[in-house]
Length: 365
Image (cartoon, rainbow, N blue to C red; front, side):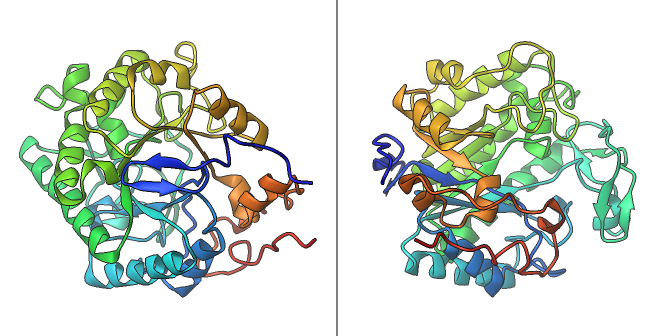
């Protein structure tokens, strides 16, 4: 018997798109792009399997070689990468799906092994306090990053703009600017990692300046109504968490509200850990300052997602881990079918392999 979830399964306007349901496939790094970071047929199969989602957001995709920091994750800064993504997008569209590309720069969550011995870059020379990082040479210690010079920042903005141009040519329905989880743009936002004294640091407004300038540049390419932005106000992942987090993220949300974005994607759940520097921020707080489409993420079930949407706290909910082992998650939610067992974490980031990636069964009646 079909479970009635009128809110979760109703259509929604998401910027320039109309989506058939409010279940979003969240961005998940899966490390299947090979050493050349070029999207491939296996990745096309993986995304097509999940095309019934209201919206697919791709795995994080680097905007430049400088942005790399994950073994065999994809990029969008060469003709070959663009062509690879174009084949993925065409396949998803043929399957009836809609897909955004998540734009990424790892910042300090990288290592010199990715950069021919040069240190990773960040807003300030603040080392990530972590156990180790996986690099092309194996597990290595995190390093102190190099602070970007003020006159270098325009080049970073241009990398995002060029990546958006490539995404548009590849046929993506839009892009998501990844400003969460301790990567470059999140490090600029947060006082813990941004100790600059130029126009990109020192105040809530200045710390949000780079994100604002990137969204402005990308808007000029594809239009604000085809852009999402992801934030993680509560997160401790990649050694994040700032005492003034609430002030910073409410200011940032207000700033982004002026653009008319497709959506604002907030990791409000605490599944990635919580920095415990105050009460966790909620979707209700963001709803009070952000008038556009709001997406929640992290730890939701079908029931809690339906509740969040029905109560008006969110317009969309994205699901990550449940989608790894359940390519037909929409159908399972809609019909009350059991979910497949959770995928083995050992297979999450297996380079080049179909195991734990495209080999999960759909529900059999």
